[in-house]
Image (cartoon, rainbow, N blue to C red; front, top):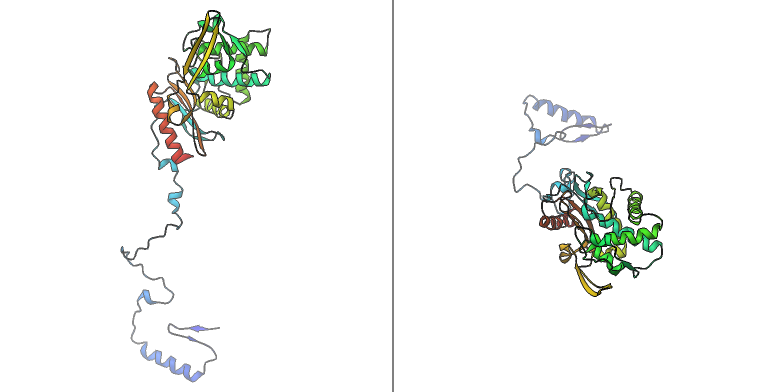
Length: 337
């Protein structure tokens, strides 16, 4: 056991005369009560000194970040772009992880974005039936007379399936959509209406991908019979499709030239992709517009190991789609991916 004083530590083994002398000395001086400053006491907390610029320590760059900074969402600190589309979403392509969006689960018409599923269904059925993309399709009167965007196909034209895939996706040909649906639907069931069989397969594919808010009535997307989906479902569908090499090759084609055979002669046609972003580092996927759906766009962008799918439904205008897709890609690649 030890007894502590303010100036030294005295063991119980110390000789008593010395102890008495030291204690008597303290009594003699105790009559003068002197207050010791608090800052100099041994066991009290030192007084806080007012900080000055010179006394402030600068933390090295490796120091741990304050908690209040790490707890703030990164998106709150980033310049998130304004997007005019009523519904939109961005996903990391291969994981289908959502990056950002607005009204992404509201169901609405999707116009020619429907052709994404049309192309998927054709590719899958051709491969499943072990048929060839070099097979020739004869264009029916129904296909050649449909209204809307066109690949300029004529009644009696003989066109390879491979060429029709480009006629479907580049100029967004409704005639090519009907021709492919008739051809592939006939492969599925020869004893039933081929277009109905094809559309049923489109819906079966949507169900298999758990696109619960998606329903198709036709292979082209015109409002004569409504195709419904959401920004999220379309993005998930595109994310799935991008993994298919044939799909990716077609939607990333800027221009396609082919020869079309007809009883009246042979003509050369050239189809230009309606996707204006292909020259700006984007790699597909599909444009679309109807009065009910408004300007729509599904796009795919990739740079090094970063990849993204985006969907815009009912943007303010046709041209605004391109600007907003670019802004979302830059925002995502810099802050979200």
